Length: 352
Image (cartoon, rainbow, N blue to C red; front, top):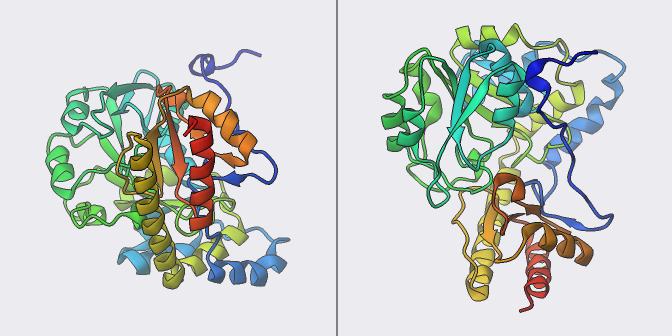
């Protein structure tokens, strides 16, 4: 069989290593687990798995509509925000088109673009931050999509409301801006973009959110996009039926109402951030201040070798060689106990 040309150079996804019993601080998951209200919803819904799920995610869309003060026509639900990215690319990318993003950002933007025969252009990053002017300068007549991760994975940095609005004025109306806010709930800065309000002013923006991070439902795969109805309709044309299972829908609906769990998760993250900053300062390591639930830190040695040593000690982190950073790792902010164990292991690896 002859594979499509655009797939020839693509490499199948390779899951990270995980040592049984190791503390996992590699994938930006919630260290507190899932929302208790979501757990209860799962127990109550288990008897429905012999039936097909709601193919339109009606109840979940209604809950999201209420939360964001939008119509359900503004929302598309996917099997994780990864699928939503593929739906977007499937709706708008054709062979010969391109998309634009930054260096050192989430790799799924490139995957989704190449999957449909497009190419990706990368703007340089400076000190861990997006350079929005540089991104705008790469847009041409073939640019269908611009991907912005805010806060950015893996650097944890973010840009402000004013910076985003200035950027949007430079983007042609026929280029769709994909604003990925997977870590939005962890942000504390007061000038973070009010992205949903942009829908009142711009036709060419879609906001992505997920239940995988602060809501603790990574294993159930639920994400969603928010956009003008005409964009949602285009995406729905590329969506497979029954793409979000019934347990995931039930858990997501319940998690939306669990404000106590979200607030506790934010508090634990703030506490862990402060502890890890102090620990890295003590070790003399460079890192980026984060607006997410992870930290990028430079360890002054080969990151893959450090990853192997850390895993042998009982903790997994993310080496960032695939991002072109040979001496950096990304660590999820865990519970106090997990953070302390991680620092002890890191000290051993660094010979401190």
